[in-house]
Length: 105
Image 1 (cartoon, helix red, strand yellow):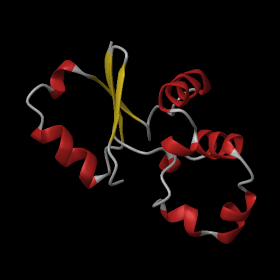
Image 2 (image 1 turned 180 degrees about the horizontal axis):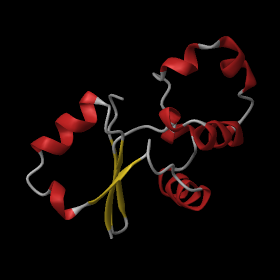
Image 3 (image 1 turned 90 degrees about the vertical axis):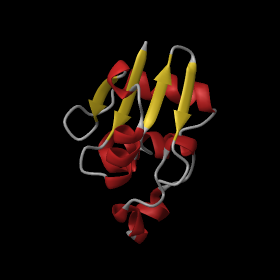
Image 4 (image 1 turned 60 degrees about the vertical axis):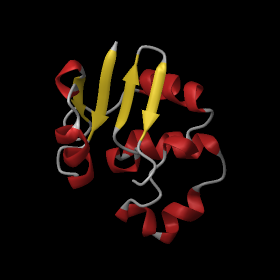
């Protein structure tokens, strides 16, 4: 399975996808249109070791102090990602059993 989770309104995502020679080989999932499912998120967290590793701390909504204060553990990162698509780091590439996450987003 080759899949990429991205945000179509994100300049960095568009830049990365357009620069890839084989981007058409990947099933492209726009997380704004099709939110990530709990099962897929759980599988991704299993691969990378935590939900926090999948959490986009640069999201504009994360600047809200009430959101920051609500985080007590890893499951809070999971809850926030499922509630708001912008909290998922992106793009995330899945290539069979390998996962790649863009570090600068």
